[in-house]
Length: 219
Image: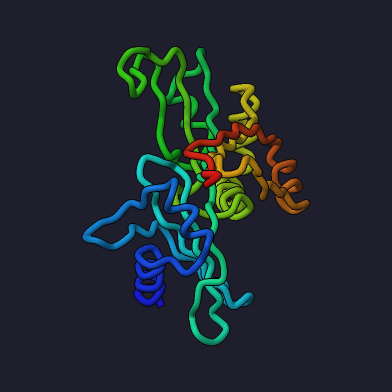
């Protein structure tokens, strides 16, 4: 199915049959590799007879999204953009050592931050130590990414609580980068199950929301 989806998307980008594809190709540049569009992920939802493919866009974090109906013949049912979503829990401290922070939980962090190390730009030094626990980097829905990170944090609930207590950090930072498109941004939904899971861990959500890219043309 993956090969078929890739072939259908390639044909659609070369010879658009959807008006939305035409509109997006006027303002977005698809990322290709060996003349094939780079697909970051394909999700299959058998219960809804649906598949979703996320195509990379040059110099952008968001994706071009193709939704497929898989009921009978595999065919595109919708074209849209999907935002980049990144979620992290980053407890930091100016007083506690990195070794102390690591000792408070049995979970291996995605990365560590050491006081005195330089930021990625090489100009500024970190003034604190910290641990960083990140959601998966692949595209996907907000609820899925939240649940995935919570699955990890719940493997050591008491350790995460102790980290939050000693660092006074209890935020999950959610970064969402939309395509500016027509300026209409939707899709933010947190169900009660996720809210309850956050509550048991003593965690909160902080959102950073951006919009990038080009707006639709009026021609």
